[in-house]
Length: 478
Image 1: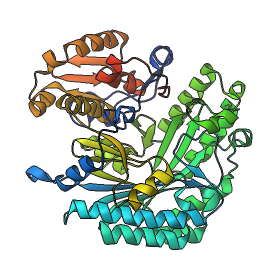
Image 2 (image 1 turned 180 degrees about the vertical axis):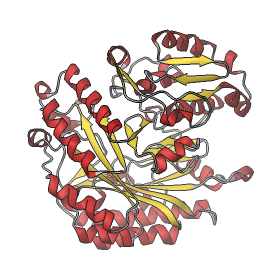
Image 3 (image 1 turned 90 degrees about the vertical axis):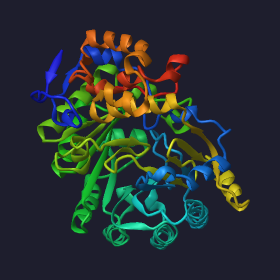
Image 4 (image 1 turned 180 degrees about the horizontal axis):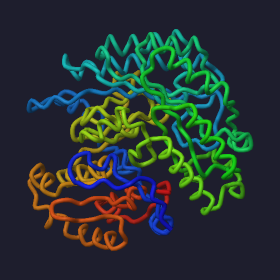
């Protein structure tokens, strides 16, 4: 069954896919909506190795501008503390009511910044900063002021740069929102998931509509230029009627962006999920209905489907970047900054410098110990091979723009695309017979039917999945 949500728009080239139609084909979703990576990186984080150490990271920090290529610099700060646990959460977090723990953590973050700054040298102005977690607003006002001060002093933050933060509206006052604005934050992401009281009780996150709307209004009053709302479909006790009411409330609040994530129930990986009764989870047909209902509602409200769980208004930076061919994907989702280097700070944080990815220690005590020893707290990482780089370029193009130019990849990476990817092109031909992709001349394009399943298309180019077909630790595509 097909549901056409937008009229088609012809043409190929960078950004043409941004406003093209989206078709929800439930039969294809049932067939191809299995487990797979979200491709916030390639290779994915489960391919990182501990042989990549602090010395390797230091080398690339020192040499990130070798060859005269100066990429924008972004900063991700992981703040792991939460005072309650949401049962669905798959983030690296520390649940505690001891707010004194965050004071020590901010001190260590400052020390990590000093070490990173020393390796980067003079050219280190930050164009984009994001605080994630955990719950970044677990920090006190004084700790937030101190942490921003450390970032400005050690790394520099460009005037007018993009500064975003994830907030729990249950823990944020109007005064706190105003403080965030004075500190330079201009984008805010508000966790909602679902307003249905039965669902909130099942996932241990009781959050009223009123306190959520209050934070959004405060952000508007204080000049935040973008508000994002996070939703999850597939949660326990979720129903079509209840989620429909949530969608009405969210669309009525008129956020600039909406992230709609599929709940991945992996209790063998994430312990808090063991508190969720599997019998309470919606059956696959209901979960699919929740998704298609949400897409139709967002499309009717004028949002653009950016890709992989994300929707934005046509004038939002993500939509503009997609039209202009600048959209990229990283561990925070989609980004309008273009190809950039990312410094990850804090426990478990992941960074990207040139052709390498690097992840910090995942456990707090190990993170502290490495810094106490005067070392960067690197746990693992990976230096990309030439093959990794070309596959990353293809996957990025498909994930961000729903198309890839074979000629552009061939020129940039000195390969013959047709010969290099002969096996992949045969697999794509099978997806083409299903209507997920089209291959015409120089272009490989994800069709309107394939856009919700773009992860499955990207997986064709994933050499690691080809060599190892186990996907048990990945979330479902739909």
